[in-house]
Image (cartoon, rainbow, N blue to C red):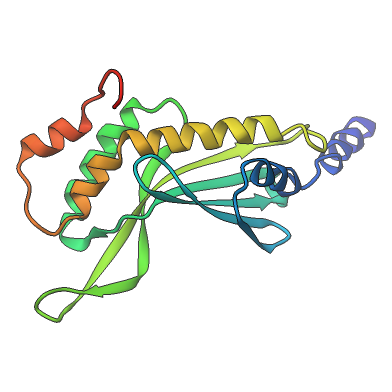
Length: 183
């Protein structure tokens, strides 16, 4: 029974990593909002667009949920196509995944009818058991870098999917291609 008690004590050593995330935000001069003790959001500008980052600390699981969402909306008539493309993208990722979060704001289209939209999101949950105060900051900083890089990598694809006009398969194929170098 002594071993079980010692194991439980390890969980008590994990501090709230949201506190360490504030240091990352301050070092980057990012204006952030700490909605609760366990939530932090920030809006940042990347090379391709705006991104909203959200961090949610789940103490009962000793886990940090992370979401990075570009400022794009995919219209309901493109959901199936977007799901297939996200499946293809996710097969290439080594960390995290993309999915669509339903946007609770509905848009009015040209024919004055409401249309639902979804936001493409990069998501990853990190288990942080055994880490002590400040020890999770560097991995979270790396996770932010990976998420922004992947969102930038597929920004053109999500941008095409957010357009209401039909697109041909070549446009999406070109958008999905990895390029060498940058301008």
